[in-house]
Every structure is written in C-alpha cells, then in structure tokens.
Amino acid sequence: MKQIILRYISPYYKRMGMGFMIKFFGTIMDLCIPYILAYIIDTVIPMRSRSMVIFWGLLMLICSGVAVSFNIIANRMASKVSSDATEIIRHDLFSKIMYLSNAQTDDFTKPSLISRMTSDTYNLHQMFGRIQRLGVRAPILLIGGICVTFTLDAAMACVLLATLPLLGVITIYVSRRSIPMYAGLQEANDRFVRMVREDIAGIRVIKALSKADYETEKFRDINKEVVERERKNGMVMAVINPSMNILLNLGLVGVILIGAFRVNAGTSEVGKILAFTTYFTIILNAMLSISKMFTVLSKAIASGDRIWQVLECGDDMQVMEEASNADTFAPDASAIETAPVETSAVETSAMEGEEIICFDHVTFSYLKGGEANIKDLSFCIGKGETLGIIGEIGSGKSTIVNLMMRMYDVDQGSVRVSGRDVRSYQPKALKAKFGVVFQNDTIFEDSIAGNVSLGREMSEEEIQEALLYARASEFVEDRAGKESEALNIKGANLSGGQKQRVLIARAMAAKPEILILDDSSSALDYRTDAMLRKGIKEHFPGTTLVIIAQRVSSIRNADHILVLEDGVPIGYGTHDELMDHCGVYSEISRMQTGEEGKEMKIC
Image (cartoon, rainbow, N blue to C red; front, side, top):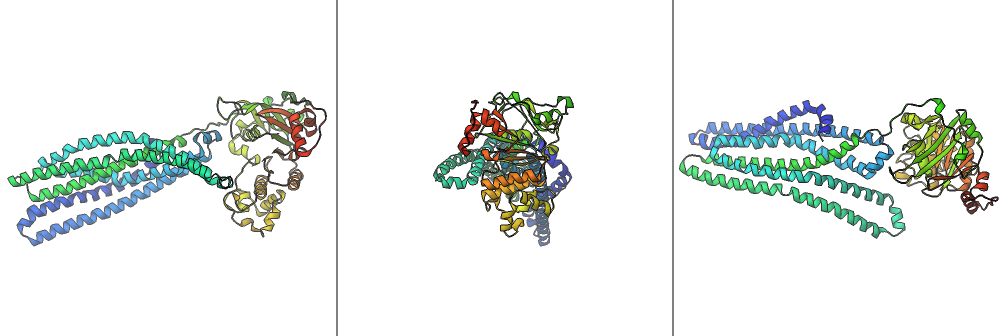
C-alpha cells in the first residue's frame, strides 16, 4: 500500500496540500460556531445590546458560509485527485496484465485479475477520496473540539478526555482483525467472479444439458461463502460505532451532571454547557468518521496489496543473448524411435541454416515439478512447408503452439524460429512472425473488418483480400457488404464456420512467415477446408504452415506429420510413411477415411 501511495499519490501532493489547507480553514470555521454561540448566550445577551447580538449572529452566519464553501471546494478537489490517481492505477494495472506471461496469468487466475481491476481499484478510489475529505476534517474536529472544550471548562473537558483511550483501543483492535479478513473476502470474491464468468459464458451448454439446478446449487455455495465472510467482517466492524456512541454518550452524561453542579455552584455558565453538548456532537461525529475511515482503509490496504502484487510482478521471460550460429540445432529424425525415417530434405535445409521451426529435445510442464505435458520432442520444418499435428485431446498439440510463440518457456531443450532461440527475440518481433488461430479463439464486439485488422493499419483491399483467401468473402457478401456491421460479443450472430473463417482471415491478413491453424477447420465442411488449404498454398507459397487437426484429411498432404500421445511423439513423417509405420495414425486414418495401410509396425 505504501508503494502505491508513493508512486500514484505523490504527483498530487501540491494539489492535495492546497485542498488540505482549504479543508483546514473550513473546519476551523465549523469549530468557531459553537464557541461564538456560547459567547452570545453568556456574555452578549446579558448586555441587552441588539446591535451586538446582530453582529455576532452575522459573524456566525459568515463562519457557516465560509465552512460550507471551503468544504465543497476541498471535496471537489479531493474527488478530482482520487479519480485521476485511480484512472492511472487502472491504466497501469491493465497494461501490466496485458504483458503478463501466460504462466503469470495462470498463477493469478483471470477472475482474480478481473476482481483486482474492478473491485480492488474501486476500494482504492474510495480510500483516496475518504482520506482527503475526512482525513483532515475529522482529526481537526476531534483535536480542535477537545482543545476548545479545555478553554471553556477544563474540569468538564477531562471527563470527555477520559473516554478517548478506550475508543483508541477498540479502533486499533478492530483494524488489526479486519485487514486480513478483507483479504480473505477478496479471495472469495475471486472465486465468485470465476464461477459467474464461466456460467454466463457457458449458459447455452447449461440449458442444453438441463443443468441449471446443478449450477444454481454450486452458485448457492460460493454465494453463501461470500455472504458469510461479509457478515463476519461486518460483525467485526460493527463493534466500533456502538462502542463509540456508548462511551461518548456516557461521557456526555458525565459532563451534564458535572456541569449542572458547577452552574449551581456558580463556577460555570449555561452557554458553556450548551457549547459542550455541541462540541460533544462534533467530536462524536468525528470519531464515527474516523471509524468509517478505518473500515475503508482496511479494505484499501487489502486491495492495494493485491494490486501491487500484479504491478511489481517481474518479467519471467527475459530476452537472452543469441548464441553463435554454430549452435543452431538440426535434429535427427531418429530422435523419434517410432518413425525410422532417414534425414529429410527439411532437415538437410535446416543444417544449411534455412530452417524455420526447430524443437530440440523439448520437455515442458505447465505445473513446475509436475508431470511433463511435452516430453523430449524434436522436429524441424523448413520455409514454405507444412507440418500437421494430430493426437488425442490433451496430447500436447496446442502446447507446441504455445512454446513456438513463447507463451511459455521450455523446461528443457530449446525452440528455434528462423534459426534463433525464441528466448533471444524481443516479444513483439517474435509474435510478428506468426499468424495464428487459437483453439476456441475470440471474436470481439467489433465489425468483421475490425476483427480482421484488429488495430493493425490495413487498407480495405488488404482486409478484403484476407477475407477472400479465408473463404469468408462469400458470407460477407451475403450479408450485403456488412463487413462494417458490428458483431455480437464472441460473434454470437455468426455460425461456427463463419467465425472460423473470420479468424483465419485475421491470421492471414498480415501475411505472416508462419501460419498456425489450431483446430481452426473443425466447423468447416470438407470442401471448404480443402479449398482453404489449397488457397493458402497458392497465395502464400513462402509461408510455413502448422495445422493442428482432428481430421486426417486436413493434414494428409502435409510435408511432415507429427503424431502425439500424452505429450510423447510417437510418429513423425509423411502420410504414407505413417500409414506404414505408425499404428495409431493408421487406425485414425482408417476410422475416418476407410483407407487401409500396409503391413504396419505398431508404435
């Protein structure tokens, strides 16, 4: 929390200082009003001077006007500072989230990042505003009120002062308990947001499977946990206000009793008693304001720590210096025991330094120290060639894409793109080489043209060309040229095949060196799929193509096909070679196409 204040509030110290001065003078005017009232009752009225009563009455009116005006001005300044500071915090937090590595995003979790962007920044905004509005006014009213009461009557002021240590003990005790409790509440809110996010995103599946009651029951459990934590926090914080009311009101009763005896004895005056009751009200309100500040501060400290965890998160993917060209890896096909194929033309070109993608004995696990998701994977493909990857769900196909683009760093081995280790590239330079359609990719709430260009400076001709090559121009024309029409969130007003073609057009639009299609034709018919791949070969002859598919027909003409099983490469070669040597691939092919293989070596 201290770091956030130093970084984001320090630029506003001058403006805040001016606001504090204005708030200070306004608060002093508030404190003068009861004192003037006591003076009028005890001194001016006995003088029976109408002009003096009017004069002091006008002075009270002026003090009230100055107090109101100054407090309004100071509050507006405080609101401006808190809004500006929170805006910068949100911007920096969002920017940081955009540049977090996938591993860091997984550690924080997406619902938690959403919660930090929304509720946590809101708690900071509340704290910044409350501290400026009441952080000056409440302490001045409290301390000033006590000081003024001593000038009026020291004996009665001592009664009031005796209650303050007890109030301080209660406030400190509650604050120490509330801060960790609010941190736990925010974690529960993270889980709450995650469930709501998942259920709303998958509401059609829930309805289709008639699982609304099941999800409602799960929601009831997490909602109950959040409510229970809020209730416990509320019970702890609820101790402050009643305790202050009781102690201060007991003090007020003591003041009135002592004051009555002193007035009866002639050592005090009625006006002072009236002023004391007013100052007691002021002090009570100041203490209540301070207690509310502690509530807001407890939330803000917990939220500030969560936000700072993201902001101070270091870059876990440092760019390393590139090794000499002599270290460039050219794998041997025999590295995969189940594909005894001689060194191919691609590997020969790789040895000459023309390889595009090389995996050198790569091992990787999403969970550090856990079971490897990719185990000792080696392959190499050259410029303009096609790699097909096939395997069962969870076999590590999409993981290969993540490692190619350095979404994650390998645990062992290395991944090379254009002869360089991916860890030696600047992130933007590496990503610029790729055009990718991820599995379950996203259509944004934008026009078709906006989804294709995605903020990149592209001409209308380039967008239309990408749509044409992705076989998407047909349905765009059917929409009467509505490529500028806004799509619904996640492309809800497009069919599955239309979404995939828009996504493919987005990947092709920048004419990348490497085009990755991760299960991007699952919603396409066979004819469209075949025409799409043919068009890519014709119009992007120099582009290296990586196709991850469940259908053999999508990859059978690839220059190289990689077969994965539980993260282990069990086959590598052409379609014909795998039909001869890899039983798993041959079985998949027979099941999908009815094609018979030759006598096989079971892998």
